[in-house]
Length: 313
Length: 220
Image (cartoon, chains in turn purple, orange):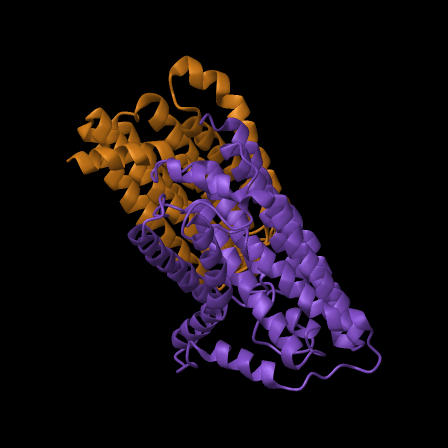
């Protein structure tokens, strides 16, 4: 039974990911007084791309062709680590949060390699920027997770979530607030959202993710887009699981699971509203300001780690 | 009634976290209007703290102080700042002499230092460490804002943040000063703000800018 829930949980993260994107795009459109496309459009786009012909640049090697599959595989593994409806996950005993961070890094690494291998100038530029952002985001990401892990004295995500579930919802500690602030900033950078990267742009000088996928088409592009949607959904679920997990099912009764799923959707909805407010209200930063942004995240997460020493609980 | 009690306990145990957050955000704020809003938010947290203390210690005077803090620091002073910034037609940037990252690291160091500094006091005076550390770090952050921001308006704001810290320290160590003294202090702040406002007007009239780092020569 537990295995079934775990598998359903991963499928929910993977299959629900395009919907998350669609909802955010729709919310953004409504906030900007536009009609906006249907929330199901990302699915239609993926279906369309999977049916299309796959064009590969003649100069590229096998790296270009393999990169999307490896990215997708790494991202699905990440999704299998994140608890959604109960304090466990499919690969919960298979590794700790370090593995999660570096699985994400592995995916980015292959995507950057693929972009370089594609041979276009924009691919190379996007890859170099991606490398900059990801190397700067790594420290705050790890430190933020370390702070929470020290509090829970566990290293596996499911264990941390289970520990947080036992705490009172009113006992917020400075560590949690600071770690949430830094991880939220990292999540924006990791998933290529607004202040760091504009997910809707095709303007040459500003794009990071879009620049990297410029040479891809057809099913491979679909895999990349799907993987980045899964990454966004998994980051949302990670933030929810680490900081507001209350309401997760403890047993395996169907009602408990359904209630947990409903609560998860409400929490995710609130986060998505926040995200679309940020994306509508904040202008994209110049590339040179991104290190500043992530430097602030690093400082906040370092402070969170320091505060674990002061926290008596 | 019980709900009020729970809320009071929560405010008393967690307000310092929010104060630390406002300190960190003040360190990264790029625009004067953001910094003023953060100051207003910070004062709102302190208002909640005053009211919670008043409820818990059964001090009727403290309610009056709480209302005064709200009226003066949350509403009046930020409005005055916006009015001033509007009249002066100044640039929005705070003109920091440190980058935001450096500022956050310095603010983090300040917070850590104040924890280390108040540790022994807190135990001998039976005051929670968090609250006292928040007060001391507010004082230090105010001073830091005053020395690291070049805009005259930001220096006024730094002074107000510093004053917030002193007020908070008085509140948590002695449950607030007598009402007459509090009113006197608030009056002082208002007059000080008025004077500083006039002064910044004179600076911008004479020099056409508010950058205090460029005030090197006397001009008549």
